[in-house]
Length: 121
Image (cartoon, rainbow, N blue to C red; front, side):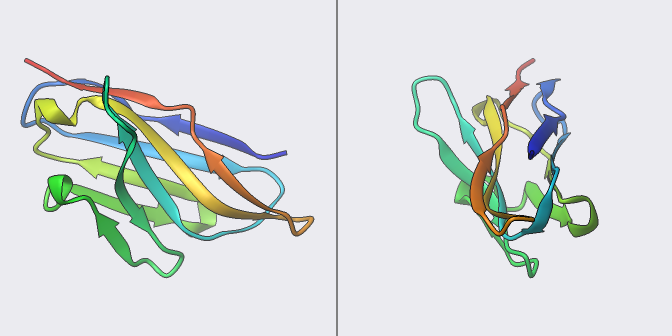
């Protein structure tokens, strides 16, 4: 059985920082790409950043230079360091593991439960 544990959201003032983390645990053989998405009220879910198994990263233009995605392969964990936060970053943030291979050889797409990030003074 596979579980995801997502944490790190909260309320922060503009210009502040937050770090999100998300771990996938259980009977896992391998985890390929990892990513973070967000969804603001009334808007579609959008990609924030993703990272391949080899460490190559990709960012939405709106967060380039402010957010950093990283991963710990030993812990099957993905992180999102968010600096210089703006009110428009306010959203529910979801982690995503689109290709998790379990010990039975099955491949699955997993999503975190979402964590609220609110940027406000």
